Image 1 (cartoon, protein in one colour):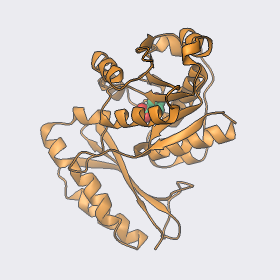
Image 2: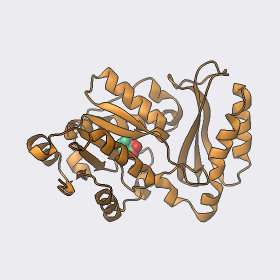
Image 3: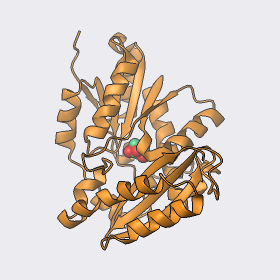
Image 4: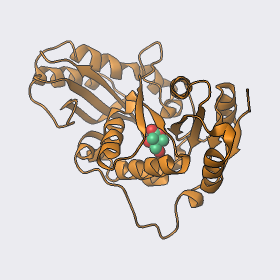
Length: 284
Ligand code: PAF
């Protein structure tokens, strides 16, 4: 039976309907987002639907979480096309959409943060201080508020995914974490809500990110991999590298040789727009 999409703005209402209303008694699968939904998010929703099964419930949250932004200008420029997002969710068959405001999510005198202390020290965690504290804190809150059985995250944010898995393991959070593959444009650019903020020239240039990583990943020597990717990215007149790093796929610590599965990861700036991407590399 199609019960239509329910829009909820408070945590108590969300818990109230999900735990109290019989029509939501099935397997609850959460897709946490910050909105500005694109095909990548819709793939997460599709996976959530599959995971929830015919009697399950797909919950999407849209919340631009201020405490995970390290730059005010980035937070202020984050796209928030709520009407379009709601229509996309409706069309994708989402059952419940949770759109809280900041005061609903955070008390003015809040003083508790969830901190992961190992995997979050490299890559984005090193260049965006406090980012993953903000992510872990809001994700744990969303897990509690939605009482979800499972949650779907994109593999594009592989460091976020690894940290959330670690948090769930370390804190015995009873939520199954499901990974959804990165979705790319036909020219290779990974889908991101930030892509719409690229100028025309920068959008034309941006496929070079994935091209540089993919070419470098064909090499077998760790130093050459980094050098090749750096050179290729350096050919672009538009971007600035935030970090480029070859890390162990499990520990996320930098590696000098390809003895274990590794990840070549990059963050770049096109003016103030920051994009991330990565490729996986098998041992030599
Ligand atoms: O990946 C994102 O969009 C955000 O980091 C998340 C998981 C929704 C937490 O705000």
